[in-house]
Length: 157
Image (cartoon, rainbow, N blue to C red; front, side, top):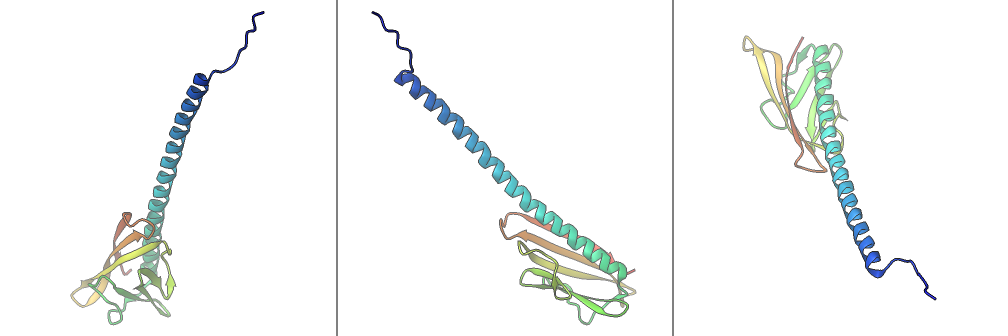
């Protein structure tokens, strides 16, 4: 009697396990690369959103301001202070501990560091401030290689 036993040999089993291991390593490498790309994209997006928010906030403030208070503002310094006079009140942009504040309310998220808030006044006839050139440098606290510089020229309307 001849018994025909069909099954998987040890060599075939080793081959299947090896192929399966290679496929798993390739999939894991792809997943880790995708996760890193997503993390980097999220950081970059967060910096861009913050830059856009600051730009819109400053534009909105300058649209409603009457004048710039030159006495309480600090110009030509990387840690500037900008005080704007509105119809009934004055409000200040300040940089404290790498966070940009508007009237004591933070306008930058905790994941973003503001390294520079440089203000350069633009004068009319050498006496009245009609605009301010603003340079703001943003940096991610999660990954310091991500930076963005915002350059604005805001005019008192």
